[in-house]
Amino acid sequence: MSSDAPSSETESYETLERPRAVRAAESGLAKLPLAGPLDRLGTLRALDTAVSPLQNAVQKLPLGGLRDVLHGRWLGHPLHPALVQLPIGAWMSAGVLDMLPGTRRASRVLIGTGILASIPAALSGSVDWAELHKPQLRTGLVHGAANTVALGLYAASLAARARGREYRGRVLGFAGLTVAGAGAMVGGHLAYRQAVGPNKAEPVQHLVGKGWHPVGKADSFPVGQASNATLGEVALLVYREPSGETRVLADRCSHQSGPLSQGTVADGCVTCPWHGSTFRLVDGWNVGGPATAPQPCFESRVREGFLEVRLPDAAPDED
Ligand code: FES
Image 1 (cartoon, protein in one colour):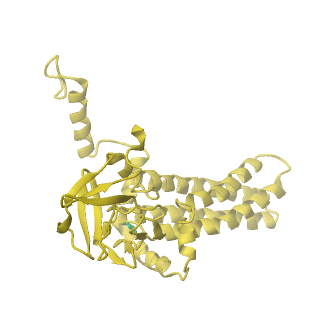
Image 2 (cartoon, rainbow, N blue to C red):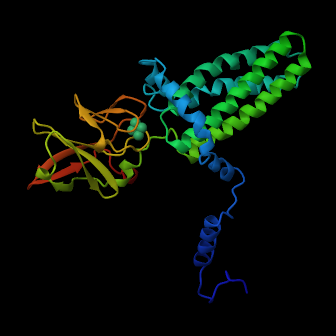
Image 3 (cartoon, helix red, strand yellow):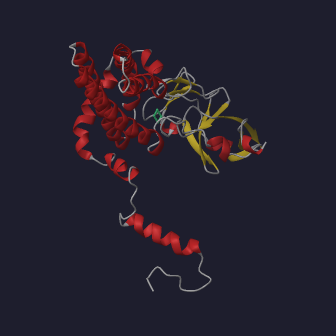
C-alpha cells in the first residue's frame, strides 16, 4: 500500500487527494505544461536590469492627457486588448492568404496594415505595463520583446516581398506569426493568470450585503484625514470632511489593489499611493488613470454615534 492510500473505508476522495495535490505543488512536482513555465517568467530577477530603465523611460514619455486615453479610462477598461485585434487579425489573414495562389498584393497590404496597427497597440500596452507590479513587469517585458521581434520579422517580410523575394517574404511572415502567437500567449498569461487589466474592485459588490452596516464609532475617524475600516472582507477608506459629510470608498484600488487609505486626499479626490490613480471621494469616479474603472462608493450616515455605510449596488446577484 502506498503512503497515499486511504487508511479506512470512510476516508473520502477529498481527504485523500487534496493533501497529495498540496504536497505535489509544494515540492514543485505539480506540472502545468504552459502556465508553470510562464509563471516562472515573473520570478526572473535577471530581467530587472532591462525592466527598470524601460519602465522609467515609458513613465517619462511626455504624453499628457494621451496617457489616460491609451490606458482606456474613457473606455472603462484597458484599450490595449482591443487595439491588438487589428495587427493580430491582419497578420493571421496574411498567413492564410500566403498559402493560396494569386494573393501576393493582398498579403502585402495586410502585413503593412498589421505593422501600422501595431504601433498604437504597443504604445497602449507600454503605458499599461509601466504601472504594474514587479512580477507582472517581468512577464510583460517578455511579452513586449516577443511582439517587437514579430514586428521586425514582418518588416523584413515586407521588405523581402518588395524586392521580389516572395518565398523568403512568406517564410519571414510565418516566423513573425509564430513569434506573435507566442507573445500573445504570454500576454494572455499576463491578463488572466497575473490579473493585469481586470477591475480589482469588482468583487466588492458581491461581498457586501444589502442595507446599512455599522463600521465603527463615528468620532473614531479623524476629520480631514484618510483612515480605514473594514466591512466583513471589504476594506474601506473613510474620510470625514470638515463640512461634516463622511465619504466612504472601497479601499483597494480598482487598478492593482493599492490601499487608497494610505493615499493623498486633495481637492475632493484621493490619489492612490501605488500608481497615482485619482478617484473622486463623492462618487468614486476615476478622474485620473491608470485605473480604468471607478471605485465602489458607499453611502454613509451616523446612527447612535456609529458610522453606518450602505452600498447602493450591493449583492445584485441575489436580486
Ligand atoms: S494600485 Fe495602481 S493606481 Fe492604485
